[in-house]
Image 1 (spheres, one colour):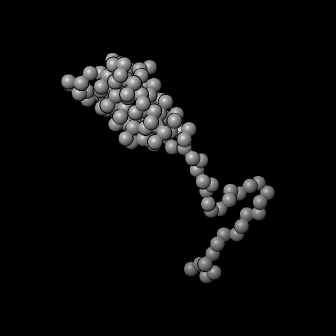
Image 2: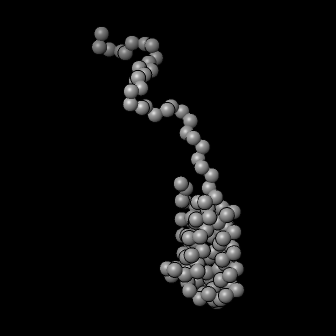
Image 3: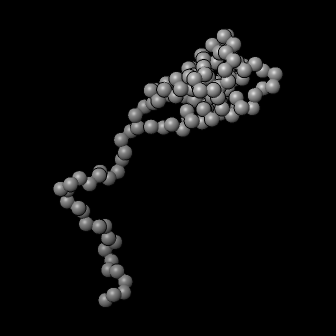
Length: 119
């Protein structure tokens, strides 16, 4: 399971929320952080983040995104779930199959020349 993108989005959102905008409202700061996280996410996660950012702007939510249980935190969680839910299963690995109990062990591959020294 690839968790890198949600973690990066979360870190970006926290970083942007921590910087603050000085003149921006807390709702706008949170919404902007979610919009920036959406730019770094899969389409499924981006849709969740952008939708929540719009809702935060419309309702003027004042909880900072860094506060546990805030609308921003919930949006990041929902986006992570959407991203993981939309992820494709990894293709099967190619190459040697694993050794199972009872399988014969193949001999080591050699170049056909005798080792040097020792004779």
